[in-house]
Length: 278
Length: 157
Image (cartoon, rainbow over all chains, first blue to last red):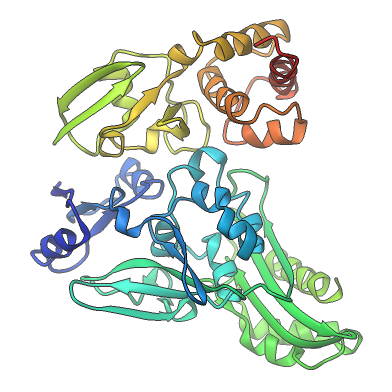
C-alpha cells in the first residue's frame, strides 16, 4: 500500500498530482479502518491528512461560521462558539456514534464517506450550509445540497478535497427546530431514518419551512416539494393525505437489515406531523 | 514509516506500517495485553485507551494517528488514585462478571470521573454508552461509577 503523510496542505496537493484517479484520505479513520478490516480497500494510494491543522477548527467569519473538514465531533460538541451561534446543530449531534468515536470522527469524513445515513447531513441541509472544496490552485463553494450526485457519489473531483463547511451565523435564528434520529438504540446506532426541520410561523401560518431527511434516499436531501406545499399554509389546513402523497413522491425508503420500507415511510410521516404541530 | 509514541510513560520509536492498528502496537510492540479486542470495529469499546487524554477505540486508530501522542491504557489508569477508586467501587458493587469488557469500561469511566465526575446517572450512562458488556445488565456498572463519583465529590480523593 502506497502511503503518504504530507507535511502541509500545499505538499498534499503536489503529491496528489502524481496520482490519477481515486485515492483514499485517512482522517479520523473511523470509516476507512472498518473497510480495511473487511478487506474492502482497493489498491489506491492512501493520503494521511488528519494532522493538517489548516483544515481543523471552528472559526467565526463575518457572516458565517466555518468548520474545518478535519474538525472532530468532540470539538463540535465542546465548542463555545457553536453553543452560542448554532446550538441546534451542536445539541443534535450529541448522540453521534459514541463518545469514544466522537474523538476521532471528523466532519469532512462524515460528508465524504457519502453514506445515505450520514448523521450530520440532514442538519447541514436545513441550515443551508455550503461546502468548500479545495484543489491545488483553486477553491469552489457550493450548497451542500449539490454535493451528492447519487448513491455514494459526490461532486468531488479526484484532485479535490473538502476544505470545510460554511454555515450562516443566523441559520437558526428565529426558527423552531426539530431533529429526530430513529435507531434501535441511542448510542452507536446507524439511523433507520433521520429527520431535521426548521420552521418560522406567525399565528399558526407557516412562513418559512426547511425539511431534510437521511436514510430515505440514495443520499440525504431536502424535501423541496413538501416545503413548497407547506409554505404559507395554516397548520390546521394541512391534510395528512396530501402530505402523504407528496412524501411518496420525494422519498424512496428501502428495506434492509435495519428496517423496512413501510416502517420507514410511516415513521417519517409521523415525525413530519409532529414537527408541524409542535 | 518512523513513528514515536509514549505508552504509559514509556517512549518508543519504531519503523512500522503507519496503518497498523494502535491496538496491535499496544499489545504486540509494547507487550501490554490489558487492552482487549472484541468487535474490532469501534462499536464495543473493549479496546478503549486515552490518547492525549481523550478516549478512543484503539482498534480503529492507526499507528500514524498516535505519532507524537501520549497513550494511557487501563493498566496505567488502574494504578492512579482515581483508577484505584474505580476498581474498588467495581469490586464493591460486584460489577464485573467475565471481565473482558472491563479494561474498556475502566478507561471510559476514568475519563468521566476525571473530567466531569458529577454523580448524575444520565451523564454516567452517556459517558459509558460506547462500551458494551454482554454479561451484566449495566445496572451494577452504573452503580459502581456513581459511588466513585460520590466519593470523589465527598472529597475522599
